[in-house]
Image (cartoon, rainbow, N blue to C red; front, side, top):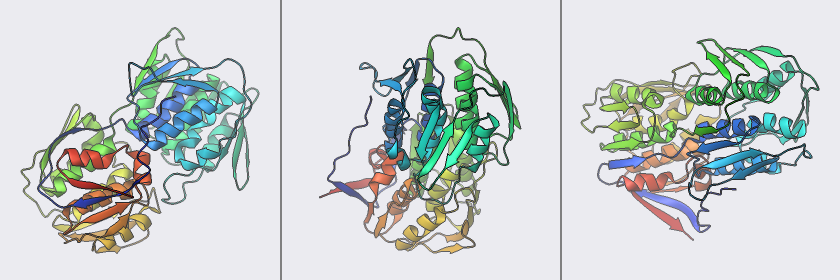
Length: 437
């Protein structure tokens, strides 16, 4: 099984000091948010799947270990680092105890694969970033629509597959949940059901999953308000999928470059995936463009004093909530009064705002999920802590413009989503120093 390079146990933090504008070119890793459902789909498909572009982030590596524990063979071709083969094993296995699944939110993607190998999925409640309650009720309604039974207790939940289920399943989601959409799609795959899903999530990650299933022979139809999947040709014997570049990492790096007044090319990301960030930068007067496979910050900023309205949404083409923290860190240095809202992750601001305040940021909380700030503000270096992945990324951006050095701890959280974001900033010229024991 492939394992990410283990960071030095002596690495405690990084110290970031302001310096000249960031410049150059850097390539993003594969997307954690896209890799996790693709890997779960590879296990659910019931055939050998070759997945390329696997990031070395901790959450993805844990998912691979969990898939292996769930009755699948996970192998890394020696000649192709960053790719894996996921191979089903014949027969049923005993229901595994996956206590470590509590470390990541995406452990719920494993339910269909476990139903395929065990008939039952027994999992702890999902963990991951502590950014508010994101319940499982909608997931459970999805499985019940397929005839499965659910049992819960304080430690976790158990899904038991129906002996026979409906041939065709129609589900309407009350809101466009990414997790519930993936659950419905993968549950249809393992049972070879026809699925009509109304009000689906149509983020690039879900559309990418559907495209991958289409390449594997499934019949997929995507419309604005519905997704239909049904079994198709089984003659597709070679299944090979590619994890797209990390749009959130690309947007974070672009915000870091823009915050320092620099110019850089961030490669390996689909331009359409980062269009909301490009739009926000251009609104501020920071020249940026989205190319087919890159995000470019041009560096000839003519600040507009135009306020940002950063509203996270699940609507197709909307702003991914994970873009909000880096844009907030950027806005601290931009003229205007800027509004931010993330109703999707109700606990995120509770993590992010107190840490930015340690640097001297003045941010007015309108509610637990909405805030405003007026820039430009002068920040000062301090000791801050990455309480979750996106807070850590935002703190690195803010530290690049603060007077004096900033020490960022909590790197284990940051590495869950980014194998080594500080190294990418360093490649663009940032003064980032590792702090060891």
